[in-house]
Length: 367
Image (tube, rainbow, N blue to C red; front, side, top):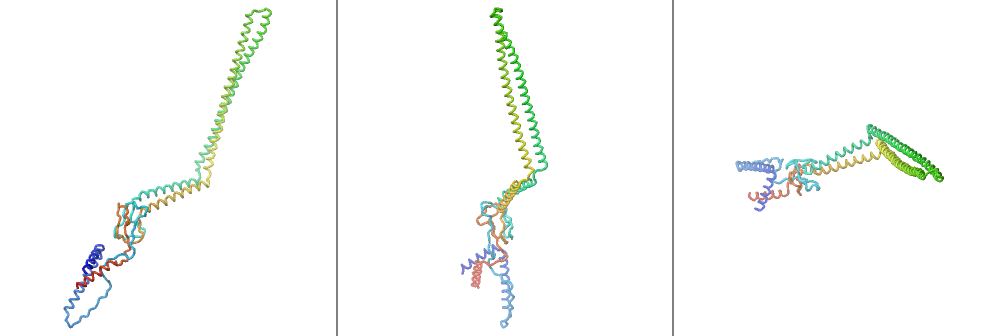
């Protein structure tokens, strides 16, 4: 009996500490019941033994008893997703005793700012991708088309000018070569004529020498003239050959430059023309590629938002915050962040029923 009394007292004290309002209500009920029985006892003692008072029982509308109340439904523990196990609670938005609703944010983890920044960056990429899609669908602006058309015309005129200049240089080199060759050829011809005259003189004076009409010295003078003329002719012919070779090299270089100008300018014009065709045409494959970029950017936004949502803890049911396990600044605990239960309907705990039974037996024993 004494052991039951001690167990009952401990559970009742624990009950009063957890539910102060229940203790107050219970105390008030005990005072009211005790007062009722005291008044009733005084009435019996004041009445005569022969008189039997008629007691009218009051109508019972409320039953009050000792016990511990607990939510009728399950008590659930709210925690963060498993991917956030190593995170800390940045902000705790509720306190014990607060009523919360489904979807209400109860806590924010320290990973939220970084994940929210990723959301903003992903949304910026979506805006960039949509702007590029709009540009592709609209095609090039009128100013771009005009500028590119002018570029094609500029390259064409530049090519014509360079070809004309190089062609003129080539013609000039050829004309110079022809003039130099012609002048040197005249020198060769003149010396050849001098040589022919010297040879004729030597032949005639050799005849005169054989006849004894002239001396040996006079014949040698004409032979020296012939020899000098022949040497000068050889030098003139060599100079003519050098002139022909040198000018031909200049001509070959000028023709090569002309070919490079024609080929290079032609390629530049083709490239500029292709660019003009590309900006004036909206190709379906370009639109599809830009649309794919937009979809990829939007998918990145969805992924970033999902990650950011995992950094906010929301309630999965309506109820009251019964106990808080993890506070702001603390790392997530295995018990979760807090317990929530539906307190609209309360039931007595089986443990409190045993305590009440033990208390009742103890009171009966004392009576």
